[in-house]
Image (tube, rainbow, N blue to C red; front, top):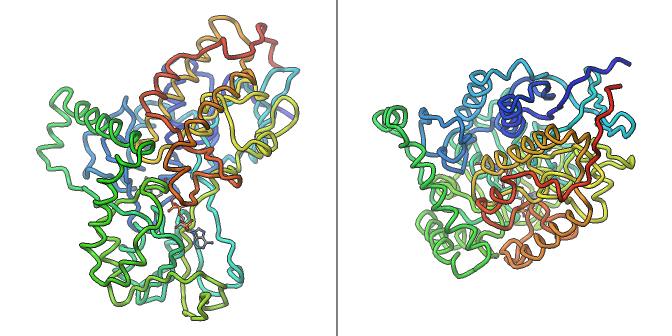
Length: 493
Ligand code: N01
């Protein structure tokens, strides 16, 4: 079998993979290829095209620090603008020729003899010195385990795989789930459907969405007044940095946000019965805090029903709840989230001792050193790795910090002639022990909710428990002392 040789392989063309592609190029590490199963850059922003899809992090923060966008139309960007932004950045930075679209990684296996990653895809095989995964964390739709759902005769699709061929006008539609995706979908489709049943298992906290359109003058100023947009970005960044990490630790600090969310509900929903069913029963911040001005008002419309009785089963044409009520439905939208703690990519990356990441993590849950490198997986870097997610700020900050760390690792390897770097088990353990000790005191552990942040054993393996500033400092330099290194580089196979 002919393997194409390359220095670095990147998996995924979302924010993470694109950032890696740009930074590798800038660092003079130009011999790389990005493998992407989709047909465009964008990752989650390419895949999530549901009605109302938009970012709930301010636009100014939700962009690369090295590619600010003066043209954002809104203070919180709609999905098509983010997708267009990523496409434009890829083009302008001249990295598109490195992307191999429509290419699915089937297996990436570390070969100790050649000290290369041997990567098989559905469109050929590669060998590379390093493997950088930007495969993402909110990628693989999680379908609900509901009796009878596979026998549903109408249309059924997941929020992240919206079927735009289905015209919802006048239809009876059921939405399952009330997370960040559902609360954006519901107000949009409520405008056209004949009837909408929203199946809620847990009521979320919903804050007002302080969104607004940027005026032409503002956009001109972003473009032409030096430093203005950066100043705005920094002020938004520091405002969040000062408040939000504090309240994941200190419940009292969360009280103003909780009051604001409950007032938002009270103002929009006057019916006490409906309001009671929409009132969360856990501490704010335990699950992702949502923002919307249109969600609650949508639920007060006559043709929209909030269903809180648990779903018992789905039949060919209806949903039946535990109270025995049967609601007929034409279209079923499952907005039930993603595989976050059992990421599919983990089954496809196989390390030094022949075990996959998933097998390695089977006993412990997902673990990495600095959220980026894993003992037993030499020269493997996972952007958006374990415990690098954020509840309340921009993932782009974390992605840039991780990619900076990777590029510094490569620079260090080149400088010292290291063939491989692999984090020491004791360093990885110390990192995770400290992280999980801190985690125990956060609202994610103490707030009385179940969330996608937690794995099957109730361990939070997804979120970063400290400030993003701290994360950036900790990853500012590659630290070879925490790694086992091999010093000679064998010739390619
Ligand atoms: O998914 P979720 P999401 N029967 O997992 C319910 C990001 N995001 O796609 O809360 C009935 O949050 C489940 O109920 P419960 C963001 O990070 C960002 O909405 O588990 N219900 C919940 O209500 C977000 O957090 C943006 O009790 C079932 C819902 O389905 C993440 O993506 C926009 C069920 C799943 O909510 C995921 O959000 C959108 C069942 N069997 C998303 N199974 C931005 O704006 C699950 N549920 C950046």
